[in-house]
Length: 381
Image 1: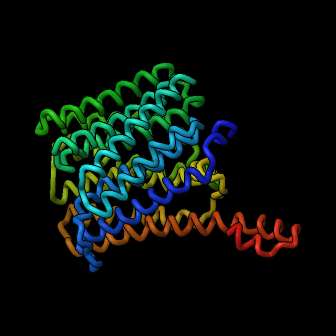
Image 2: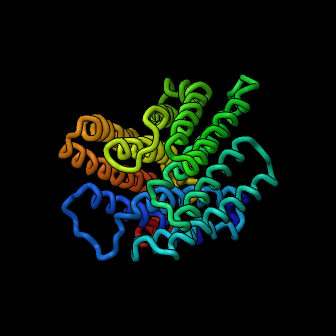
């Protein structure tokens, strides 16, 4: 906590607000792509849906969390650049300034990992740095003129390597197998090699990339503590349930890439992308929010059973979207399931804010009563 004190919470809030706006804009552009009856803006923002969600939202959250862990103020440049880049994409669509800011954020994030490596090197930290490199590679290729669909493997490297590295960090003390980290590195190397091959040789590289994802998922299924803590209660069980469901979606994406190869459009493209970025990534955010957000904002987000509602809604609606919408070709079902995906994310945000506020409210009430200043309740809320 002393290190994070070097970065005041009020300094983190603008970047967090930009990340929240990126999430809202990403969900809005998702509705546009689904053909929902929402107003269409002048800028072609639907073309930046993926970067807004992956780099503008998820990237800003991860950069903020790593900034808090490092505890140095220069590190705030990473979430600041990703948030600013997302806002540029929202206001003007795909443009040089927005792309450059997102790439700059990845470079600063790599610098953060370098500084953390100097404190305590680890395989988990190397994996997370590989994720930051995936972010850098994706934005660099985007600047070079590649289409967003061609960047997807590197975007997946960013989220999968980062999350897998964090899971390894948490599971390290419980791992008994002395070869576990070697297997982890081999799986991670296969994912990075597969992303590289997908860029150089798209037709065959996607099969290797899918095999790498399956290797990472297999490692997580075998060594992650979630398979044990799912039998626990309260928060540990909630986290484990979200993790295991997310691993199931990552397995599906790996199978689609490994078996069918590359795809740049159509139902299989939709199923593959949302299996990773909704089923896996968003599920990870849902279940880790009670742990990460209090560290970043110093506000409590206690576990409550109501958090299961958006989690179940997310996975159920995604199952309908992929199973009936994409696989069976039911376009109307696909559209409505996609809208429910958006509702699930918004519902989680609403639940998180409500639970956090209700947890803090009694403390503020007691403080106001003790100081005889009723306005403190309003100020605190």
